Image (cartoon, rainbow, N blue to C red; front, side):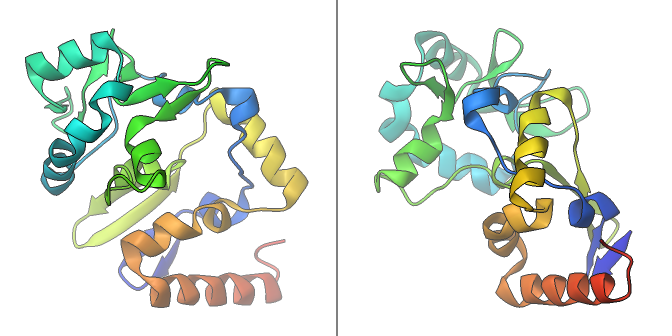
Length: 194
């Protein structure tokens, strides 16, 4: 475990390799699991604002879920999460002609239709963010559906923290990320990271 400012970082975030490989996983992280993506109240408000923009991208079952319970709910662990369809698919999933899953929120953002990218928990994935007292904690979540991403990360020589530079800067700022990079270089120099 390392600490940069008020952020605790698991070793794996710095040492493991990762690059999303949508051609192989088909966006499984948006459709697998037993709960939606963690969100906070501010994100829920932003999602509700852009909902009219993404509405036509959503499946009919997703629209029904949103109409019934809203864009988010509280899971059994007490965490606010995006609503899901049939116990697994995030309501904001949409599919291309090849069956690859994409985020409707991100699709609208990339098309310049909204200013909201997507929930930070999605943007940071496979890093899981939690509060530990006054500190933020970043852990690398590993599971079978991301096996191709690990292999591609190794092939390209990209570590988890490097792959997630943009969302880490979104959360903690550029100065913090630069401090992280400097710390990693020092750890490499000392032989702690190969």
